[in-house]
Each structure stands twice: as C-alpha cells, then as structure tokens.
Image (cartoon, rainbow, N blue to C red; front, side, top):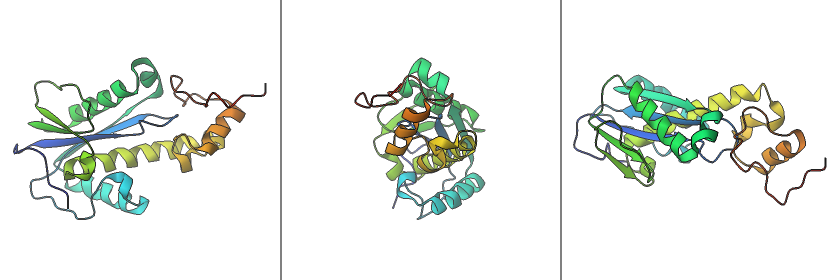
Length: 199
C-alpha cells in the first residue's frame, strides 16, 4: 500500500516524468496535488499497471485531484539542454501549471533543481512509494503514450503506437531502413555503432 505523501505539509505535489529513455518524441512530466483523504488501492508506479488500469486511473486522478499539470518537452529542447535537464524543466513547467502553489514537492528519482523557494525531496522509486508521485507517473505516461499514438499516424513505419519511441529492435531497424525523422532526438545514439548502413 502506497503512503499518501512524503511530508507533513498540507499541499504537497508529487512530480514524475515518462519517456527519458526513448529515441523519439517528447519527455513528458506531470505534477499532482491529491486531496488529503485520497485513497486508491490500484494506484501504483505506472510501469506496474496495465494499459486499461492506467487509462482508468488517469480519469480518476484528473477528476479527484486538487490540481494537476502536464508538460511535453519536445525533441529540440532535449537536444539543446540534454535529457536530464529537459526532464527537470518538464517537472518545473508542470508545477507552474498547478492552480494552487504547493508547499512541498516530492520528486521521483534522484535529481532535481530547486523550484522557487519551495522545499523538495527526491525519492528513488518514489512512484512505488507515494500516491502523489504515482499519480504524476500515471498522468505523464498516459499523456505521452497518447502523443506517440497520434504521431504514429504521420510516421507509421516506426510503429510508435506499439514501442512508444523506446529503443526496441524493431524501432532501431526502422531507423536504419528509413533514417530518422523530425520526431527523433538527434542528440541520442539512434543506432548502435555495430549496425552499419548500406548506402
């Protein structure tokens, strides 16, 4: 059973991101403040949930949260500032969207930069420990998956509706065959060095 939140502050937001390890598409972050009495035994780290559960939970989170924010940080920004900075930027922008200013920020992972003067705590595997971080992980994952399904229509050869931009064998083979497109992260190693292209 996940704990409601990390701190004793009344307004604590959880924040998390999805898509850091992908070769294509944005990194997507979310921030969520849940009501003090929020309970949901199904809510967990989004990676542990089925697609059906994630989609059901994201509706519940949006309806029952005090407030939430979701941000896509696009490929060109990832390439300019690197994926770690882009992930943190996405979390900051998501917190900025919140209709109420949090008194404390619980962050999934081990890296964060201070946001304004608000105290924060990084929690490794926090999306499996605290409900508000788990809620942020579900919102980030479902929003990013939807984005990848939409751009799949434009470039179906990469099969993003299935691999969501992650470096699967199929995805890398499609990059080798068709080359990268505008949604690929140019700063990432899109192909392993041992994979040579027949030009």
